[in-house]
Length: 318
Image (cartoon, rainbow, N blue to C red):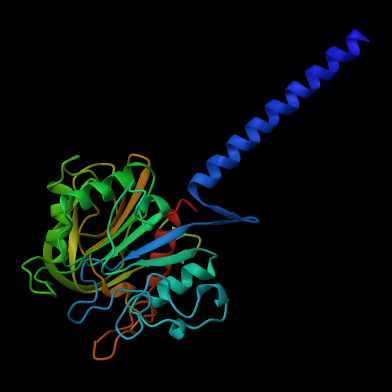
């Protein structure tokens, strides 16, 4: 009888330990994402607090009457494999819809929103998202915003940095996106040059097939191979650390640390992708009066593959 009791308690002990391990694993997964059956759903936040629609720009996934709402309309839950990019109206609508077709969720940080990390009072605090996408900011980040973004990446977040050419100050405040990104990386209170690259203020236009031959998840990712990038007035990137790796260079330049057109890097537990031109993500749709051009679907290019592979890598889905 005593032997049976001992065996019984040993059995209960191991079952209990097994349940603890499963609970820990489930909690860890829940901390990073939402599990939808076998699909891991990540949350992507597109910024609109830095004048991303100033001048001729329209770097939002959707807007109604020139207003980009937190949740695009019609609702993303109704998107399916055949949904056209015109379902939403914004120069980044194709990008947003493509992410939803991959069972991901997208939101906009509205013009009056706040970039924070660890602020429990902010319902759109970066801690609630997996990837933060900022396409051509035209207003400088405050010191608190810089710290929020850097800490978000350090603790596991993904940051997609899109810049544009020199003198691309669309709201005439004296700051363009190359200067704003450099200011974030070089003038913050946490760490100088945290991501291992800087933006070189220049203005280039070319179709480059000078793509890295090294194996990587962005030019050789699940959403297709990237064989070229078309820049229409963009800046280049200078790599300052071995942590940052080039993906595409200007034609006729060696694949070293300068004249880089796109790159990726890591910092802490997080990931960063940077590209020197906003036009490859532009799908040609947006607010009336804006002269937009379809780079997302450009004939002969692989721009959609670049942005989708990069997005999935940032979200740690590939």
